[in-house]
Length: 403
Ligand SMILES: Cc1cc2nc3c(=O)[nH]c(=O)nc-3n(C[C@H](O)[C@H](O)[C@H](O)COP(=O)(O)OP(=O)(O)OC[C@H]3O[C@@H](n4cnc5c(N)ncnc54)[C@H](O)[C@@H]3O)c2cc1C
Picture (cartoon, rainbow, N blue to C red):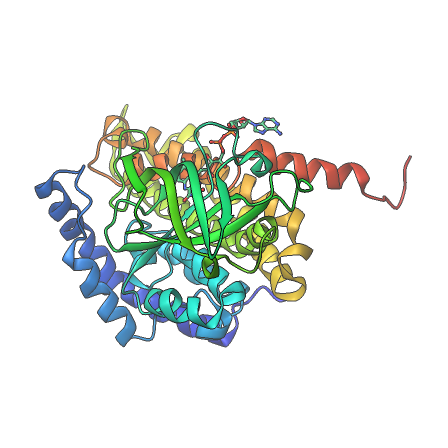
C-alpha cells in the first residue's frame, strides 16, 4: 500500500494548482459579476469560461478524466477532480471535465458507432458543445430506474419518443446540443432489458424544454431542466449499443462519474475548512479568537479527521476501479457516494456556523457549496438506494469468526 501520489499525478496536480491560483480563483468574481449583471436566471455563457478553456488547453489540462485521452488512471485523476472541487462552478468545465459531459463522453467512447462518435463525441472532446443525460422522470420514483416510463417505439427506420423528463442537467445552456435519453423499447421484456438509450439532438421537432428547476433557489448557469418529448422522431441508428442495453450502459457510465463527484465534494470540504480556520483565527468573541474556544477547535479537528477518512475511501475505490472495473468496485462506489457528500455537508455546515450570519449570505462560497453538497446526496441515486446496496453486501459477507 503506497499512499504517495505517482510522479505523473504529482506533476499534473502541481500544474492544476498553478492554474487554479493564477486563473480560476481570479475568474470567480468575473464569472459571478457577469451573471449578476444579466440576472441570475439567465443561462448565458460567461466569456471568461472560454478564456479559461483556452488557457487550460495551453497548459495541457484538458480531458484529464479519461485514461485513453490523458493517460491518467482513475486514482491519479481523483486528485485532480478534488482540486476542481475548490471551484466547482467553473473549474471542471474549464478543463472539459464537467458533468454530465464526462459520463456522456465515456458512454459514447464505449458504445458509440463511428458515425455517432464523429458527430457528437468529437465536438464534446473539443469543448465546442455540451450534452445532457435524461433519465429521471417527474411521474415515477426514478431512483428505481426500472420505473422509467418514457416510450421509445420503433417505427420503420426511426424511433419515436414520448414522455417527460426532469432534472436534465445542462439543458438550459444552448451549447447543449445532444441528449442521451433513457426509455423503454420493450415494456414487456424482463425487468433489466426493457430500457434502451438513444441520442436525441436538441433541435429535433417535438422536444420541448419546459422549464429550468432551481436548486435551493439557485439557478445553475447550465440549468436543470424539465423536458417534454411528443412524437420525437430520430433515425434508428441513434440507438446506443442496442435495444435493451439501457441498464448495462447506465452501470458502465456511473462508476467513474461517482468518483468525480465525490472527489469534488472533498475539494469543497477542504475549501470550507480553510475558510473556517481563517474565520476562527480572525474573529474575536467573548475576549478570545474563536480559534481558542474549545467547541470551535473541535469543529476544526473533526472536519480534518473526517475529510482525511473519506478521501482514503474514495482513493481506494478509484484504485479498485482501475484494477477490477466499475463492477468490481460496486459496493465501494455506493459507500463513497453516501460518505463523501455527507462529510462535505457536515464540514460546510460547520464552516457556516463559525461564520455566523456571513455564512448563510452570498459573501462567501459556503451557502452555494452547501446547496451543491446537499444535492449530491440525491443526484446519481439517493443515499437510501446506495445504503441498500452496501447493506446487502454486508449481510452476505463471510466472516473469519462468527462468535
Ligand atoms: C441538481 C440535480 C441534478 C440532477 N441531474 C440529473 C441529470 O442530469 N439526469 C438525470 O436523469 N437525473 C438527474 N437528477 C435526478 C436524480 O438523479 C434523481 O432525483 C434521483 O435519482 C432520485 O430520483 P427521484 O427524484 O425520482 O426520487 P424518488 O425515486 O422518488 O425517491 C425519493 C426518495 O425516496 C427514498 N427512497 C428511494 N428508494 C428507497 C429505498 N429503496 N429505501 C428507502 N428509501 C428510498 C429516498 O430518500 C429518495 O430520496 C438530478 C437531480 C438533482 C437534484
